[in-house]
Image 1: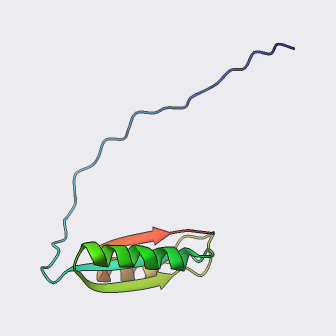
Image 2: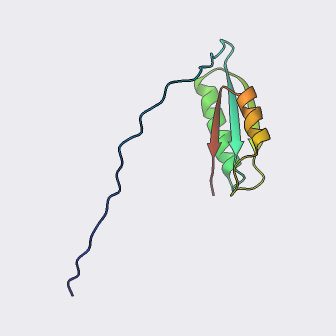
Length: 96
């Protein structure tokens, strides 16, 4: 039985990057690391390993670790605001 199969490859050009609105300076004392746990199983373990790796590679001044209550919903604005205020960069992870 011969059937014709049509494959569609949806490729789009890479979006152009926009101009940077602002840059944060990382103090000599180290980076302020934010961690957002999406509440899936083992995400906390994965993020702990990431924090250990960052600490081994860079000076870390502080770590703020927050957790979403519901895996399927976006993080509440209060969590995002706190991460924006207290972290130079944020790592988010999901795991199972």
